[in-house]
Length: 390
Ligand SMILES: [Zn+2]
Figure 1 (cartoon, protein in one colour):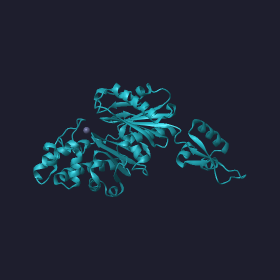
Figure 2 (cartoon, protein in one colour; figure 1 turned 135 degrees about the horizontal axis):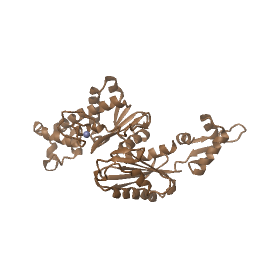
Figure 3 (cartoon, protein in one colour; figure 1 turned 180 degrees about the horizontal axis):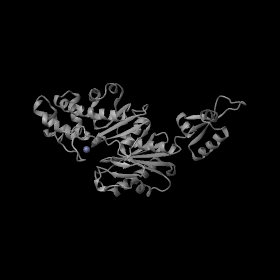
Figure 4 (cartoon, protein in one colour; figure 1 turned 120 degrees about the vertical axis):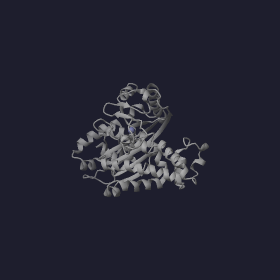
């Protein structure tokens, strides 16, 4: 009933009775319960008259009847946001963190951000329905555990994150821990580029590469909760460079910024007309900013085009494997490559089409995220809302 009102905005008891198989007095009883909880408000009288000539009461979902908090932890930022029950961001807060910062310090920052947002937004803390924290790493959603985070090796393994946070937040607040790309893809489905899709994969490429997978409108995690670790899918067994995981030719290595710079270095003599390296600070390849490379690519600099074409061809192999495994309607890209422009995306679609099955080529869309770096916190908060109402 609450979901009906959430989706329709406002309804009368008769309209609800038509949609669900309950008597009007029963609906009214449930309605009163939610009115008392603050999730539903009486909006007023409807214009049409029911039998007996009485104007019906119109009820409305109260978007400000509760609040959700979402957080994301990456290598250098703890982002957080508070939303109302419709997933609209009311306030956000970003805190700098350091790669491998110790666990207690990060926990302090999580708790400070939680109360910081409540204070800043002036909401009643008892109305916060839950907090979800997305972290880049291997997580067990069911047990609230972070198995391991590559950005925070000092934390060790099997960290009871949910329990540690719950201890510091009084009351019965729902606390959820999951791998960040899962919240990113959830945000895309509820509020972003994948709004009308039931099967979606989002790829986050930055420091490392990971994905979140939506299957039939829900996040899927797999038997060992590692589903989506596509960054370690081996797409080139002949690659020399070793991945952080110990294997060679992993997807994340083949499309990494390190490798992009390496290709530029290896090919620089072949493209003397390129101005890519002249522009960068003292000609050093390591100082070459990804955005400089993307800008040169957009300006058709031959060396930048050569290097990004190489990356695109490997990206296409990775994406076509993902398409064959998960068969999504849509793949949404997050992270550094979203800055590479429309030409890169077009090229990526073409190359993926060449590798994947012919009919797949036509049907799986590839888009850049519309939500950008807000996707993680937004997805975390909307996931809390979703779980609360289901
Ligand atoms: Zn790997």
